[in-house]
Image 1 (cartoon, rainbow, N blue to C red):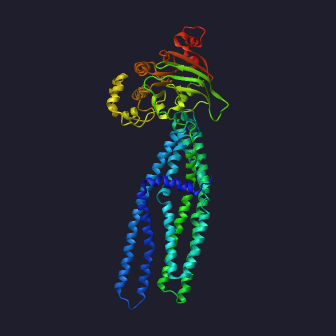
Image 2: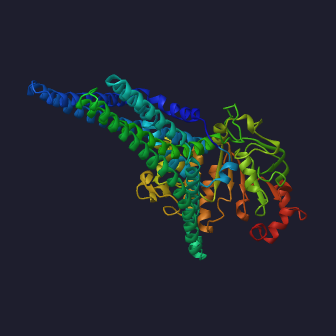
Image 3: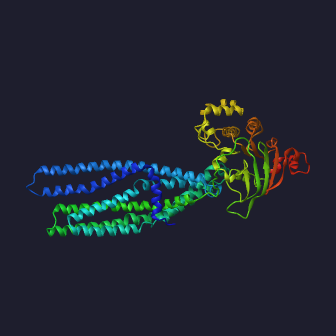
Length: 585
């Protein structure tokens, strides 16, 4: 995929526009620095010609020398300002782009996230964008500035002698044309390297997150071999990319500049011996040609950067082009209180296997305030059913209605505010207990948190923590036990006050004593709310009003729990007799 230059400009302008004032100041400073570079050699030429004129006194020499030194100092100060502002603009722009892409990825549906590991996405959102810092700070300005520097030098050469101006204009056009023709020579290799780095990041993320299983199953050697293989792939692409870059950044510019130096010496010697120019002007020729090295080398360096930038822009453009199959609705209002739920002939298949239905002809209704016990063997579609309610996916056919309206009419934010999920894996963040309970929502006051904990009967638990709400929690499962993590999850939900709660095997990993501790909190949590309880254990469905049993994506039985439990011909009755854990796991 070869992007037009317009794609680069669109990306640049979008994130530079909010800080246009600093960008304009940066432009003026950079152009001022270029002007000083063009003007300063004139003072040195004047110094040389004056020194070779016997009748001129030392005062003029001192003035020219001080002017040369003063301008050089000012130029250095301006360069510091350019560097500072450039870095500031770059970090502001790249951070804005990181936030934009992170938001974009978080709003893509689960089919996208099933195909891309967190490590790969981190490498794209952070790694690729870090490579583009120079692009946002000085890429365009440097190209423009050095183009103006070339123009200024050529204008000054024409002013001294039209023949020198013409010769060096032809040389400059040849140089720029050759370098511009090599703009994309290494882009595909840099792109392949970035993708290989993303693959390595994704693999490391998977291996580190499952380090206990890797070690306990003797797979450490495999992991190390795979890391080595992925690094070899990165090295192969990196080698090819730098070989191409060496040609663009070193060989070609070096050869061209050698030609330019020979041209300046030969032209200066010819004109000086012909009496057409002074010795100071010969110095000026050589100095300006040497000064031409600055924009030429800058152009070659920017072309080197362009190889990396091009690869990153292509990958980021591909990422931004990803669209969610789940489209946001328009209705932002869902009524308060317990929510009704209705599935009507719902079928679902994943996009990569549309012929394999995971859910088939699901039709059932859940009245406001009712609790549904959802049972079925592993792989029967229980978790997929709940993901459809959250609109992680949309049904292949059929409809799901919440609060009397199709899910697709509600905005995702409104829906996910009124529907809550508790799983057996509670996500903890490296932050205080307060931030973990509120998901970093500063609008939730401590009084609301204390009220929620009292309502759930968790005040004693809070007092058992060393610093109360200020207790620092570590990510993962190191800070809290499984039971305490579930208590935290219950409090999170209570603070949101949803109308529909889904408990996805929330107590499957708890011992009986801990589970008993959660019973009171769970009863209070479910009071006045509609709920779906996915269960593998008998005692977690005793509070259900109705039962729905899935088998290979179909409803094999549904009805009132008490009626099914007393019917010896029902499947639920058989499960109760044989033991729910043995049959369903």
